[in-house]
Length: 101
Figure 1 (tube, rainbow, N blue to C red):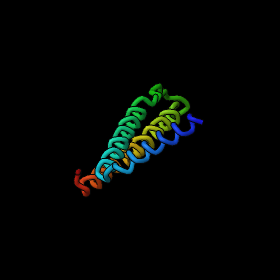
Figure 2 (figure 1 turned 135 degrees about the vertical axis):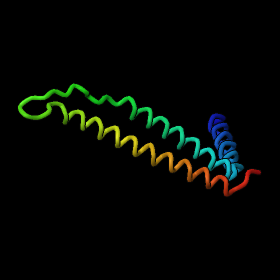
Figure 3 (figure 1 turned 45 degrees about the vertical axis):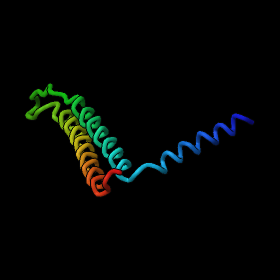
Figure 4 (figure 1 turned 30 degrees about the vertical axis):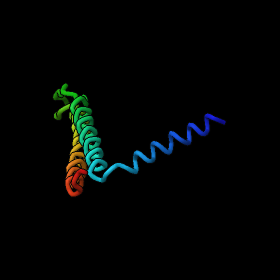
C-alpha cells in the first residue's frame, strides 16, 4: 500500500501549507477571486442579447416584452456583479487589517 502512504503524505503537505497561510494572504486571495468573479459576471451581463426589433401595431408597441425581459436579465446580473465587487472590497479591507509577515 505505498500509494496510500504517498497520498497521506501529500495531503499532510497540502494541509501544512494551508496552516502556514496568513490571514492577510487568505483575505487577499479571496478578494482577487471575488474581483475576477465580478468581472466575469459583468462581462456575462454585457453579452446578454436585448431585442431591439420593436414595431408598432394594434395601438401599442410589439416586442417591448422581450426587450424588457432582456433588460431585467441584464439588471439582475449587474446587481450580482456589483454585490461581488462590494464583497471584494470588504475582503481587501479585511486583508489590510492583518499586516503581511
